[in-house]
Length: 51
Image (tube, rainbow, N blue to C red):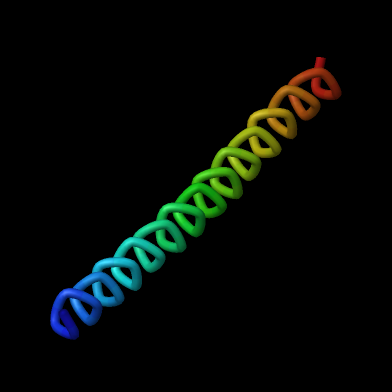
């Protein structure tokens, strides 16, 4: 029974780590998307000022 408990703890830890990585990836992707959006907006503003 102790091995089953240890295995469950190990699997739970692995699942928690996976969730944390997923959340971190989502944050990184959101930052990248925001950066690209700002860059695109800046290009539009620059084009508008050059006309």
